[in-house]
Amino acid sequence: MTSPDRLAQTSVPVHPPIAARWSPRAFDPTAQLSDDELIALLEAARWAPTWGRRQPVRFVVGRRGDETFGTLAGLLSRGNSYAKVASALILLSADQGPDENTALYSSVDAGSALGMLSVEAVARGLVVHPMAGFSAEGAVEAFDLADELRPLMVIAVGRLGDHADVDPEIAERDRAPRERRPLNEIVLNWPLS
Image 1 (spheres, rainbow, N blue to C red):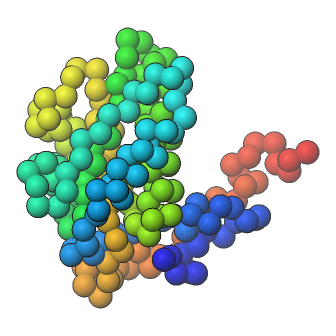
Image 2: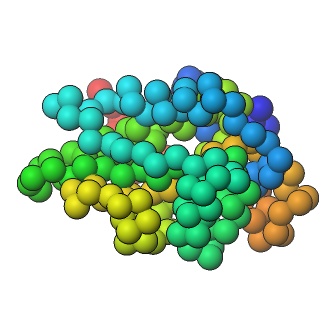
């Protein structure tokens, strides 16, 4: 459960799992994910909006302790080493297709898949942290990804860990206030009419 100080401060109420979604770096190194939990996250991502019904998103899934997890953990940049104790690591790639428009929309679909996966995780008492800091080239080689697949992120999944057990810098980053620009800075025709 997300503590009240981690809830998004919104101008009107939003769906509780959206308000509770954040990307902590402290994972419980003993927590395991059930098959149903992991499958539910992937199903949520699979049912995300997709341009032209194309469904370009592809996943490589590793659970802590298996070979795939070890490979994915080895691809992470040093700054993302905290994720090596997550319950699962998921590589999210997108089939970029034959042209620039298809490539653009495949990235949009990947973002939608991440969003749906994240909300499903929160609804199940899990946390996720997406990371762009990994070797995409290494992922292509390690998993023999097709030429049209572009690795976009590795998503750490698990249960929230105890911040007393993590590097103080990570704990400090996780304690920082959650902030977003106000609506009047991101909605170009604010106030709405």
